[in-house]
Amino acid sequence: MKRILKYVILGLLMRKNMSGYEILKSFNKNLNEFWSAKHSQLYPELKKLTEENLIFFTTTLSENSLEKKIYSITSKGKEEFLSWLNNDFELITTIKDEFKLQLFFSNHLSLDKKLNILKNRLEKHQLKLKKLRIFEENFKSVPNCQNEDFGDYLVLLGAIMREETNCKWLQKCIKLCLN
Amino acid sequence: MKRILKYVILGLLMRKNMSGYEILKSFNKNLNEFWSAKHSQLYPELKKLTEENLIFFTTTLSENSLEKKIYSITSKGKEEFLSWLNNDFELITTIKDEFKLQLFFSNHLSLDKKLNILKNRLEKHQLKLKKLRIFEENFKSVPNCQNEDFGDYLVLLGAIMREETNCKWLQKCIKLCLN
DNA sequence: CGCGACATGTAAGCAGTTACATGATTAT
DNA sequence: ATAATCATGTAACTGCTTACATGTCGCG
Image (cartoon, rainbow over all chains, first blue to last red; front, side, top):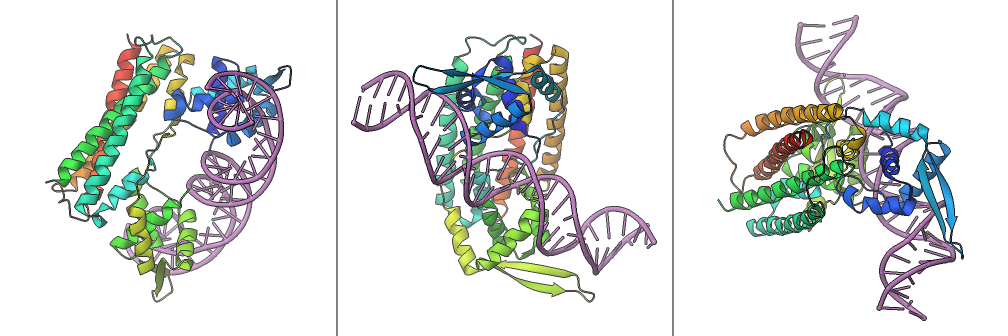
């Protein structure tokens, strides 16, 4: 693969200087729908990027020494980021999904059980959709195309539309089971 | 993780006895939308499952010895498969997607470039949708809920609806860029 | 005879997760 | 006090990909 985490980090540091911990929190917010990483993967990557001269950090210490490294992107880092950003990415062919696997093999389940897992799944997606719509409310209006958060809005919109479709699909599945 | 490949193999062998090569071909057909594996991952896994007594094989040799192992599932394998099948799977929170990452950071791109990647992406998804609809035509009618290929149909339906939504989303993105 | 599909395997390495490990700050 | 959050790191392991490696069969 192509060390994509590298470009996520560079992209985030294009926006503002951040500590590793803050980058980590980004993974649990808006980015979470399409990228994530654990701290145990992030910190070594930050170290590597620093060695490669793509980012650098300044250490801040409070009185009783809580170490905190604030990372910034270098001009070399900006260059590499923009070069990546201009790529043409291919479609992902496979989105690994254990639930779909279960459904694929569901002829080994009773009708009741089948309906049960479908309804259960529908509930989960409905809840997810609700959560995403709360994120959407944070945008008071659709951001302008030039705005920094325009991309944020588009991917959120994508996630919402995806979840709406997931719900519709599951409702259709339930209906087909009852034919 | 939970060795999901194991259950894919067991599930496929529940349907019929197959060689490793045939299992591999399944990954490039109907299963491809939600699972895949390379032969270099599959063959060691088949070996492992054999050692664990979940599957077994009979070797067939043609005159000039083209070795071919036909795998079958054992009763222990069936048991483990059915136990897995009855699980309740959680939603995947993150679907890693490099294109969405690109879009997320797209404020560093010109309007022209932005429109370019969106239109390009739309074309790719439209083509994908076309291909999926050809698969759909292979089903002469919606399979009955009890049929072995009912699950196949549901996941294909999911993939089609997903691609329809991807197209709609991208069209919306393009529209928003032009505001 | 050469090419593409059939058929099976191993080795090296990267990506990502879980677990191990430590310590400071803040709110209750 | 103690629990949650802030803050940073390493080690071991699993999953998956790329590359290495070999040989057969059928078609043109």
